[in-house]
Length: 308
Image (tube, rainbow, N blue to C red; front, side, top):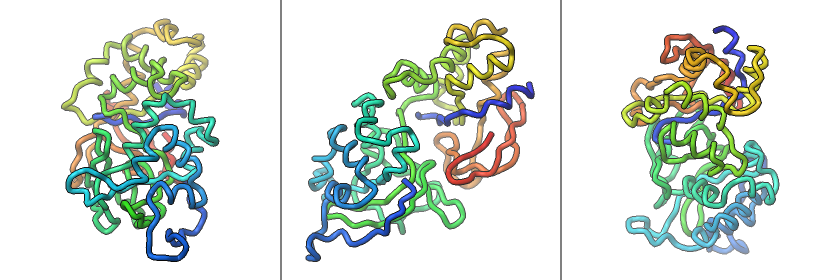
């Protein structure tokens, strides 16, 4: 089983399921006392052109150009705004790259970054859940002197807008609002990114009869989910050609079960309310134990990345 620790390309799914280099300057119009709207900030500030393009394509630019009509919002939104560099980390470098996402998924991704009302940084507490305009909540995480929302670092906070507050983050945060098994199906069927991903993982889960366990709403699993390329690399290690999802079935079922369960963990943070699994920003270097009892070594969490 030691060979299986060579899986290096993974993404993290949890149950339910831009470094900003410019100096933040005043967001006033013509030096008067009128703040810009959130949409106007995205247009006027350097480093947010991709967010502007995404908001237009995803149909939320108009929403963030106006006061929030929701009750108890005082007309405000709170937006966790990814920089251009944040979009680039998931391959979305130019506006044309946004077509790699299904438009409905792009809209939901943007809505996940927004919640009603003005939430200042001073109101954040470690482990607290924040609502979103999408069903899933977001989690505030303290790591030393840094603050994160899910796995994204807050690199500038409390940028005031006429219709709310903007916090700048260094990664795009994603959510499906569904359990691990259904989230895998969602991406494997190309409902998130146009190009299907995790289709090999889906085949492996079905073959290993683990779909039920990964659909259990009572569990709080953290899964390090191997990408399609990771499964193809596994085939090379084992001397078995795995070039399409069905090739997973060339392997003994017990082997596939063991491999998959070595990527599933039941991790709970002491003293932190835990409604889903852990984000990478909550993990430290050391050894964690998979649900099948296999120890897995984690490297240091550095610049938003975690080595397994």
